[in-house]
Image (tube, rainbow, N blue to C red; front, side):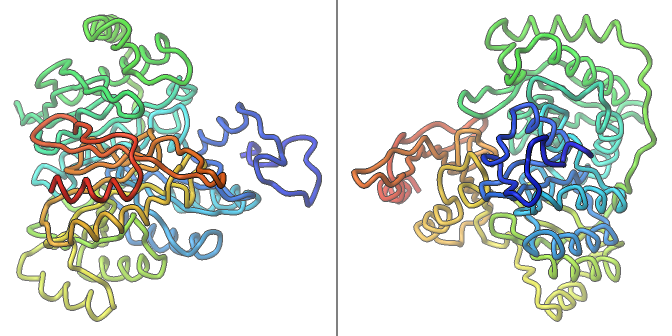
Length: 453
């Protein structure tokens, strides 16, 4: 973890912000592999923690809450890929945080940077979720912390889906859609080359009904091809744009044929309850989860829910209810603890990135933008999704929301103030959402929202 020390030449007691230390690009990339990302606030960093399959055990939740209280803002942030982030960690404390997480049996390695990112289960409450989580943990154990799958041109995102309903497979570098069972083995459709950002690209169907054991090899082959054939700082979709899906398929099949037997590590985590009859959703605006509330959830989950908290894609959480008749008792316990268990009951589901509040590349105050749009929409639209991204990287997947907002490069007014501009996306049916209007200010954005809903 020596990468977290000040670079040579930094004076003792001097500011540790990126500008004063003149951090090199290489140094920042090393930090990112460790799950550490420079913050928009001088002298601070963001640390992202992998939560494989979105399953957070009670004892780890308590440990995270104590770390957040001691080293961060007393809050954690749930991402739409079911990781957890600590914001505004003093840079000099970053190594202590990583060591504390390691003692909890948790990892940040590869949560940022050129690596295979956290394995997401994007349908964590579906009937098939336990099967997906077990495979997610298997993939996590194979890829996470493996130097063979680090130093990638950029990142590889792998997501597992119970079906095609939400179309999230289209945005993954490797999208795995559950396709049933055959002779006791899980099968998956494999989709490759999805990605958002400045040039969104829908994944293509590479293979159907592939047994789980073979999927592991195919995923390994995809990552190897990506590392070998794609230029630095580019995503896998670039290979498709330049050479087409047939070329990528050829490279992957050729690589797969040359692979040795996979050397797998034991699954490192508990995969949560094998089944549950119901669940209780918990809503957190912009994924903001206070540490003291996380401790309460940990206690309640141990008493009533098998010691499990499930993180969900719309930056929320859920408590599994093992037997339906126990739900009123769990709801009462939540109410007694002062926790809001209204979940997504009639509420608009939101995905909101940190934006200019925390992120170095954030161009707009995303929370305030989201609040203004929600005021226009009204809250009672069950199942409706709103995603706000603070830059063109589209981390909140605005192309896969009913309404998506992407912040563009701002312009400066006559006073020199930075004014963000936006693109509004609307999604109907399957596939990515399409632009309704582009390069507009906030007032025009809100007026447009009124006209399209």
